[in-house]
Amino acid sequence: MRENNYTLEMKNIHKSFGGIHALIDVSLELRHGEILGLVGDNAAGKSTLMKILTGAYQANRGRIFFEGREVHITNPRVSRQVGIEMVYQDFELCPNLNVPANLFLGREITGNFFKALKNRQMENKAVEILGRLKIDIKNSKIKANRLSGGQQQALAIGKAVSFNPKVVIMDEPTASLAVMEIEKVIDLILRFKEQGISIILVTHRLDDIFKVSDRIFVLKHGRRVDVKETSQTNKDEIIKLMF
Picture 1: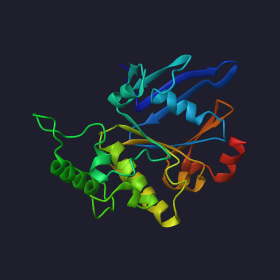
Picture 2: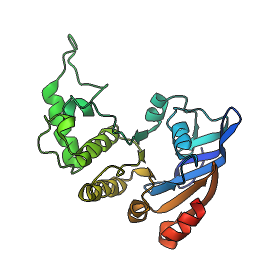
Picture 3: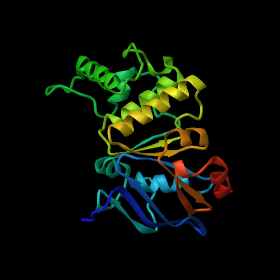
Picture 4: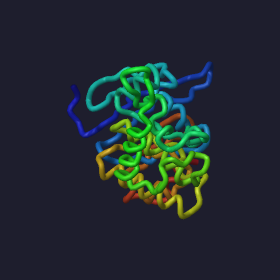
């Protein structure tokens, strides 16, 4: 058991695809209850690093520690069991299902006999989750394809948080949203921090990074370039580090 202030540590992660080195000895630390902005140009290695953390990829070498204990994340199910959730850019919602059905997809509440769905119980639980997170979806029975882009993103985030994770990875959460909806998602991210959830925010939008992050982690060509306290840097410096 390692005693430190980190929820998550990735140590000397290396990943190659054939002769291409996607990640070269990358180490990342995530503090308890912080928002870490992960930035880099296209092909910097951001997605590869996060896919290793979520079990979609396996590193060629390196170690991962979660709350001081070494973990071996062999697939996405193990990642979720450890306490890590990822919210993808495309939301991963079923457009023809309503809000409760999306929230409980794959873990539906059923009865003891005949495995009948307990729709009322899932509806009540969905309302409770949305209310706790202050997600503005007035009709929980509405189908996902009837929601705005911001509501769909909020629902996807709410689904991830309903698993009670300790770390949430957000991949470009505001990329396709209008300005008003971006602000709502930013507020939602900050509320998660208040609840003690550690967040890795992967985005090209530096405005969002500077609004919410505590530190900024810069990747370039598969290598860790630098980690800056957000309050002690600026956009120009981060852009220079990225390029």
